[in-house]
Length: 489
Image (cartoon, rainbow, N blue to C red; front, top):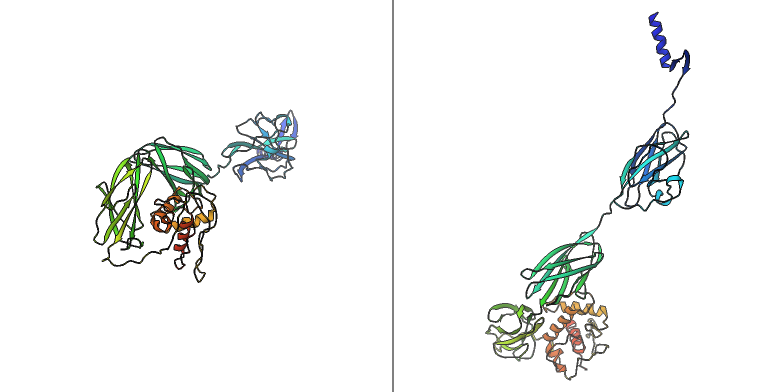
């Protein structure tokens, strides 16, 4: 009997029968409605995908709440500073629903159901969100989760900025504009200072501010051994890609000191015909600083105090000294050169082969006559342009060029390429801009071929203009088998 009573109680419990006030009530529970907030996916700098999942009960609608700070979900009323997506589509039991985070920036809803959009999504920002579902007339929510929008990957390059000050030390200021906008300063010690700057990918102009007491000398930017900069006033423009490493060297000379640049030339025993010669000559400054170099090469003595300095050349058994030209010409073993603060004085030392020495092959000569004044300027074609008899070598330059003129950039590039190949001791950036460096190279070329270029005009100093005789001689050297055309000034 006791056993039967226990079995009967088990049956009632299994059926959910409750004994209340002597009455029997049947209470069978239905499936429980649930909502789960899922981790966000497809997160970018400006969007993400919000997701939720239902339990075994379908929903009539779904939505998400979003905010940049945590909020209360104890009631389905939207709290202050919280934005809701619109009330969207039905969702099946066990179904997943999702909406883009950005929907609250284009179709947002706030307290009271007003249509107000959330501010634009920003990179690297944390957002709080929760999934809601409308089930059997009741809004049910999941757990509040967070997501953080992506931070953009910044592509960059590295600039090594080198400051070289000739004639002392100083502090030099730089501005960077364009893709990178910043400023920096360098103070030299023993004439040098270095710093590194992170550059954004793209084009940046690097400029040095004027500095009292200093003259801007040059700026040069290189990457992988090649020049990458385009010159501007007191600086360079560089274009970099991700991972590039660019070195830019800015040089200034104190306006209390100057420089002497020495260029070597050799003529045949007749004292006139220029020859190609690889013999090394030794030059000494002020009896102390000696340097050795060959014909068409050069050396520069920097950081010299203003005033007179003595240049001498060691005697040779095979060569006689013809002249040391600068502020004076001399056939003595040495000559005094006047150094002007902030400037570089060009000195040419010419030697003559002795008649007993082995003859050398003469350089191309010309029978030029005439005279005139090259200091004027007018555009036009190069006179006497020609090709060789087989028409295989055409002139490379066809228009006059000078710094500050209306130059053809392609012609300037050809000029820069040619001058860089002439053993002048300079390598030019082939950029089509007739800059100071190009002008200095023209001057060196004119000094090298003074007889052919300057003498017909009655000049004894270079001009830096790529004018009639300069271009004619460039074209002749570029086409060595071509006859030199008659001179027409």
